[in-house]
Image (tube, rainbow, N blue to C red; front, side):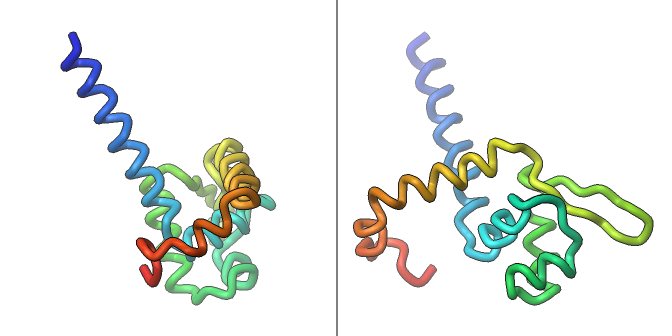
Length: 114
């Protein structure tokens, strides 16, 4: 029984780590941040994030595959949206956490330049 519980916790930790890797890219965070304001098409995401169209499209594919973003086709346009309001809440919670720990995060050398 103890092994089953340990395995479950390991799977949960691995799943959490995988989820956070989805958020770990600045371009993906910029796209998710833009989508917090509501659904957008690619050219609107390009305008709001300052990223190139190929970069936005590449990261949208990743976000779609990971289930963080959903898409709806309307004629020739595809409108992207955050898949769950909880994602916007998480990003807001992260901003609030950064109000408390930003100095330490900024000083951390472990993730610089990645």
